[in-house]
Length: 375
Image (cartoon, rainbow, N blue to C red):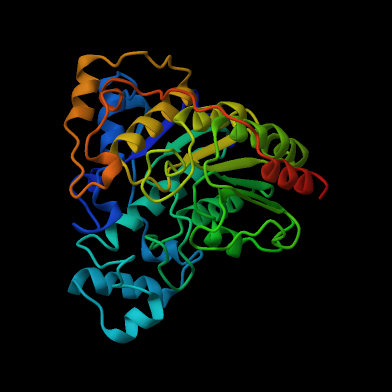
């Protein structure tokens, strides 16, 4: 892409590998996610061929932009053998309950990484990319961590740097702290990182006082965070910091696990909170890449990320889904669903937008925002 070129419409990066690929029957990522977003957006007429990009699979040499050669080789061996030995498990954290060896244990994360690296290249001249398969923010250079085998947000940000874009910003609104990304850019004076995550939640990093050497703003939030509180965070932390930093490019990790219905967090957002953040930051940088991330309820993930795609394109989210779109949601299954998913409410099938979940801005959050505002 020439420097003068600019995307005229947002693009969506997907791939067939996400259909039928699973971490295993007992894993939280046994559910369909990206494939459902593709189907739902298509059923709504929001994913024409001109806006769809097939993700490439990143080659080992490309992944060495951040990951070690030994680790990449270990992932490839694990996929070929279907297992790992004790030494590999100990060194690279593979073959564990959180990070199991499954049939596409190299190809699937390498495809997600290839998609986010391609997104960075495609926005070089300006524009918007949505790559919902991305957002695996916990992986480290030499080991898997927290369901994440490759750290595609880091690879995306480093690829942006390779395009000559020095001032990069990363915003993470997943329920879990962006530990791998913060590790990658600690002490970097040209990288702004903002992570909003549930306090006392795994990986138990991202303390309020952790500034990553200056430009990291970590905001642990109390359980039950509501939409009103997220708007306060947006207005008092996210938007002022982005405006002051004036990034050349912004990468947003839009994890869907901060909503009330997710089984792996105790936050209480509606998906309107995510839509509001994306709408507000869309114009804060000339280049925007929006990733997925966490999210372990198949209906809330599909509805949220499809709604994000609507926001990026200025599509009107209908009050009631058309029949084709509703059929996509009714066809979803959640094997071994926890209590929250055993009797899905009707609106999970018929709508994209949740009912807003407003509430007070609690004193603990006000105090933390004030402290970060004084930095």
